[in-house]
Image (cartoon, rainbow, N blue to C red; front, top):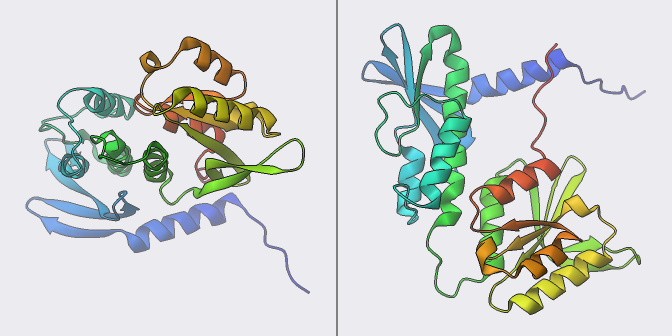
Length: 270
């Protein structure tokens, strides 16, 4: 007889810790250690942090790795929306930025907090890497492709994406939307709404979402530009059939998608 598997907290925690342990590699570096974590940036490079002794504790830094990747992509972290988003990431992660150079993600803490601090710096570095969508627009690149690229960076490996995805309608038919994001039985449907022909794009989005049987909060209209670029009447109409996020608002699209399609739940504590 086939035995049913039972999920318990101790088993899951043990499996996660073994995976982290098996895939984490350290290398001596000066007075400290370089720690290669089983995590990757959007371009596939692995996440590496430096741990150095400092006074009575440790200083952990990503050595500005994420900022370097953004600079190579043409993102300006010195001023503008990207700089504001970077400051928000640092503050939201509770990182004190001790002795940090421009673009460097760093923090300091006691020895008993070392594991958490390493993960905090790694997470902030990954979130910073997601800002690559703020790179200057490439000539001829369609807005739908920019939306897809941005959501792909946000999703990483923890969610599944499908372009031109069929969205169920109340009639039983389906209509394609720009993207569907799924994880653990939850799904969000994203429609890119371009400024190239704003009236037509908004009317199409309104029509498709209005016919959908999907919950309103799971329909996301991603509008090109900022709120100042759109007629308040158009925005108000779209809000009656979907959530509305503006592409130029740092991290707003990601926050909404996180609400609808959260990442895999953290392991339960026994």
